[in-house]
Length: 340
Image (cartoon, rainbow, N blue to C red):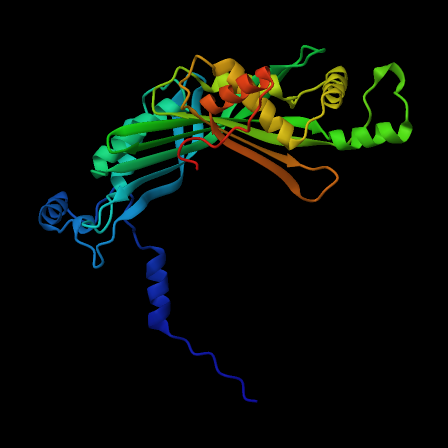
């Protein structure tokens, strides 16, 4: 085979050489004169306001996975947000930049908690888009400090936090949600081991069982501006669960492990006991139609699958169940209004 000769193209090489020395405009230099931008903006058709080819209303249009820096009493805290509005069938699209403009306008303000921020943003976005409905969904972490029961060592931990607000036809609903990590021990294995051994363990030590880390969330929703914060929800979870810490010294670990074995919990027990703690804390404080959602996910140590359990009800339903249980007549709690 005859090798292909190398062909030299001087004009092409000269072009490459000149490109190396080309001066590009910096980000501060405009391609068009400002007068050109003003002229185009004044004469251009507003594309989102055009009528669509198929005039079908849309439920949710907006931005998702947006990182928001919310100024709270704890400092500037990052949240991931979905921000959406409904869209009439008479418009082709929304003005996406107007959502970001409202985010920027709130950047310098301080809010009592993530829900207060979500409420304000929800109202502003609806007005900016002339929408009948808007929704803001925030998800993130809040700092919390826990103390070891024996060592007194302080552990820097986190609460899983969420705020969901919905504006529709002039009414605003808001839901606050807190999630915590905790440990559970399975009562089934304990009962079986007790039957197999046939006698109690020395010193009243609880029977062994498999244990696992779980994440349980509690959410309260209302149409009213309730005086219940994220700390209150965390306190309810703390009353019902064996909370885990990142920093535990050996005495703290021993106490936590023994506590969860002395009071073992199914995922079903977890959800019911959180509901009971809600009823005890919020009865007479919040309206009976306050919605309550509880969900627990257990990362099983001896199974490959996770275990989940969930409840959607109302505070009134929980209080009714508490009263019936106290009187010895305990019907099952039904779903919240609107969940049927």
